[in-house]
Length: 285
Image 1 (cartoon, rainbow, N blue to C red):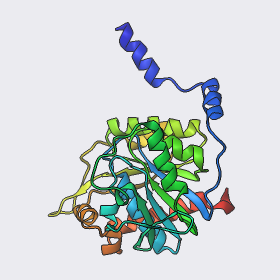
Image 2 (image 1 turned 90 degrees about the horizontal axis):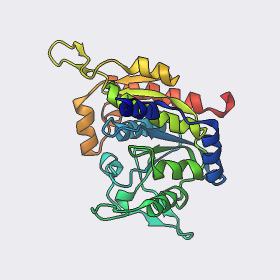
Image 3 (image 1 turned 60 degrees about the vertical axis):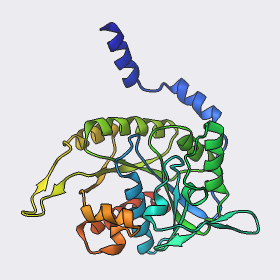
């Protein structure tokens, strides 16, 4: 029993100020990404909560609102942006050996899935960080108002590489209402706070499902989001329903925000895009 108590205490303990100082010392000086005004990470410690779907539809709605938008797939081990954005061509390079990101739906996109064959990336830390930096700094992103970065699950090398190389304007957390998913997201939020990265808020994905017969809204994953969000001291920005058409749109390469811009699902992301723009607006910082 004592061993279990100690283990729980270790999981719940917060990082000390001394640990924060040591971590800060190990990070190189950040340099802005030329021609890119703001960088927004879409993140969650948990996998399978809909980060990529959120990143894709957010980027599309930002572009529809008149922003110059880029979408970087930082999930090197499970890239899904090429499928969801209907991109298959291998990117070209310019005279400075920078990758030229292909564009679709008004969004510049880049993913390791466009640069390699359908093979697993069996890499250790140094290769992972090098590939992340190549996608980030070796790409002709400019000019962009916002670069949306779809991050992998966890709190590992890719996240650290992103945050130590460029100033990040904010992180959008994504989680389902399940307590297990929220607790993992909470650990991720603590990492961002330690590294002084602003948290824009939390998106509750798969919040409910609507009955196709009577239109009743049904909660199927629990209802712990508000409680955990309060513990994290972050706002719940939007609650997104499970939508069969949205899932099909992701697999067909046509986001639902493009297919049906007047749908309830699309309107949710249109509101989210406005909130994100407002929270990273330089005039309000």
